[in-house]
Length: 145
Image: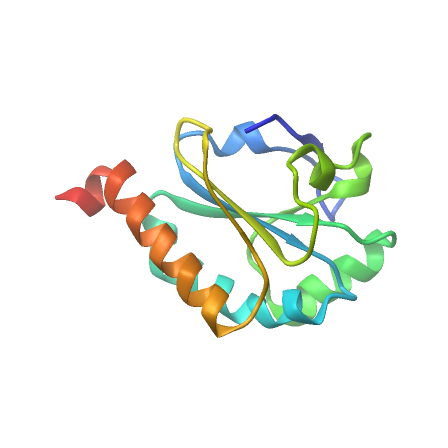
């Protein structure tokens, strides 16, 4: 995956490379994207299920207003950090080839993109769950044992 580094929604430095060693779901979202907001409960569930096993989520937020994005993150109880896409030039979403919302990349512990997905709803949530479980089995010792 190409490196993206910028600011998170709290103005703190963040880089995709800091997630090396984990299976990472990169989740593109924006406050104006209803399907994105609908995926939040599924993402929270994925973190609860796999977060202790070498899995992480990195949000890529595409809002123009960082404060609005931060408020929506807090309202929905998102525990994962989100890189503010517009803190980078070109925007992080474009660098990662995320051309629609919601958009997802699954990255293995070595930093390689192993899956791309787009869209919201139950079918997307089920597909992501399957892709993540498959990646966890293939890339983490605690799941293989």
